[in-house]
Length: 197
Image 1 (tube, helix red, strand yellow):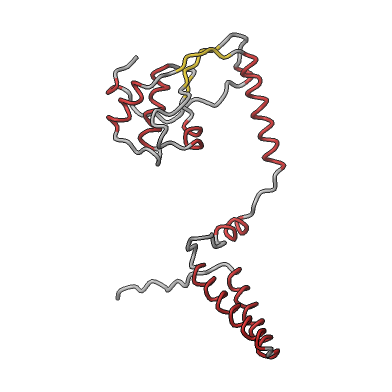
Image 2 (cartoon, helix red, strand yellow):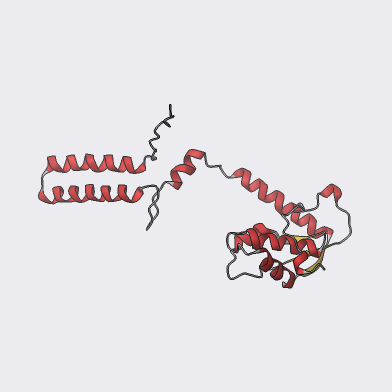
């Protein structure tokens, strides 16, 4: 095993599985970290994406861990600290059977089929969803638009309570327009760049 200061960060180079045409009936050895050594700051999805396992060697597996600890937004450790943690972390050494690999390939193929069956969101739908004001936040100026809508609703309620039907219908139209504006995507006005002469 390499010393801590010799562990260089390495992006994952290995494929996620052994292709069936390259697979043999023998068991393959692999190294794996079950949990992130800085798990109090790590997130489940981030750890899963890090893929800190290797068929190649223990050192390569530890190099993947150094990469994760340095580059993950949840850690962003200095290199020396990441190297120390990766060097000292408990690593699992196991063998993977041909049946295990066949099952992993079948699971992956099944997940790909399920993804194909799910309708993809268009970019317009994604933008509309991202512009939907979230509770307690200010998303794209939505807070001001919501306050304007709330004011229109308050005016409508006052007119309804006072019994003024003409005022109520005008307030209803204003509230309807405010709702339409709230649902419409926001656009930014862009001024042309002035060039110096």
